[in-house]
Amino acid sequence: MTTEDDTSRLRATADFVRRHDTAALLPLLLPDLDDDGLHTLTRRLRFVHAALLVFPPDVPALRADLAACGLDPDTPPGPSTVVRRRLAERHHRDPAALDVTIRRPAVPGAGPTPRTVEVFALTVPPGSDLRPVADHERAEQHEAHLAFEVLDPDPLLLRGLCALLTDHGATPDGGGHNPHEDGTVLYFTAPAAARAGFRRLELYAPGDHRDALAAHLTASAARPVAARPPAETLLRLLTGAWTTQALAAAARLRLPDALSTGEALPTATLARRTGTHPRALATLLRYLAMLGVVAPDGDGHRLTAAGALLREDAPGSMRPLALMYGGPFYRSFGELDHSVRTGEPAFDHLFGENHFDHFARDPALADLFDRSMAASARMFDPVPDHPVLTAAARSPAGATVVDVAGGNGELLARVLTAHPHLRGVLLERPHAVEAARRTMAAAGCADRCEYRAGDFADVPEGGDVYLLSRVLHDWDDERCREILRHCARAMPAHADLLVLERLLPADGSPSLATAWDLHMLCNVGGRERRADHYAALLAAAGLDLLAHTALPLDAALLHARHQPATPPGARP
Image (spheres, rainbow, N blue to C red):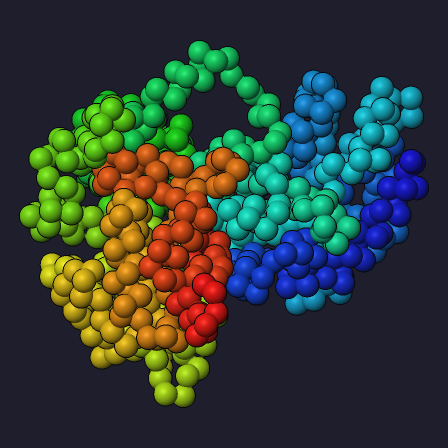
């Protein structure tokens, strides 16, 4: 291949960008994407560019090619640290010898939303020893990809999007952070059945999302470039407890509430505002900066997007999670070996009672637990759009959604807000019902919701849709079968059951469910399960698992209904 081939590919890429948009591209990239998944992704992603790597002999030749393809030759270049690193790894070259630039000229006529061609360029003069690199890359097209910008990215959303893409056949394939434009890229290899003509896709998230990037690199087939010696790897793992406590201490001291993502504050000023020791605070800030929670800025620090989630007033604040994981659950994890030896919760061993009773006895702790559960509520975002709920909302006679053990009402409030013609019934323990009343009132749904104080044996009858969110993983199999039988007895023949849980991957791939499985063992006495395990539990209660749909944060929504009745005289 030659520079003429580069010109042809550049022209074809610009034409591709001009002809496609987000909704048209996603089914081509992910052929088994269902309507729910497409709806979720089109709300969260925007097609922004198609990319290719070219090898001009010099900069004037590149400018001429851009102009010949109707692209602006004066588009300013910048350094591409991610592609430079990937090239260096593939070809065993010194990154400093690979001057890879990046330009993003706009594509005229690409619709109302600006789209570009992302042009990576590595200059290869005649006779250069980089010619084998150019020949290989032109043949393999490793860097050609389609990119989607994540709208309003945060760590939870990024994890959920990565899980959704993976569930539909995309394979994690590396990524990185470009400090020159402060953007994080997560690469995927498209499924073999993809029909877009590009083998790779990219999620682009403005900002430094190092936690999501680290999880993505762990899941990637590509080995991280800076692989560490085993002793260093283990040492870093052993300091994980320090990370938990550093985040919890920041939350307890309200450091994030004293900072912002805009103006940086000097350490001395921040120490006065938080009542902390200036030198000790500087040590904590240095560690938090390493974690990506704060960012050094001149003589002070400011919050990153991840750190802003620790503010009490942040939408979807994760401050309650930091306090819970750095408080009661941190203490019980110190007794994890007890759980592994006996199979019993370390929490019960440490505190002398199960966590439900322990929290119910302390109103402040119960409130913290409810708010920590709500901090992961981003997994609820796609739930109101599930076909079962949209069909119920269209019922001329109206329909009722029963939320069994519905906590503070966050999920039911979202469903009722999305569907004004639905009514709700929430079943919970007495102290939690009051929290749910406040949630419903704040959402403007109080007049369409009834509240029942009770236990699983009190599941209200006559509903059209039943919700069971993050409940079954609290219990062993016997108790789960009992809970599901209570639900099945209350459900009319036409009713649907939606169960929200994290599913353990059948292939052992990395997942938040694996971590939560350990958490459930240590603190609750429950467990996470695979889809086929839930199918068996449902079947024991006379319910069929019909389907399950991926949700953010490695969660899933399982849809079940009553098993069809066996006709008289038929063999069961």
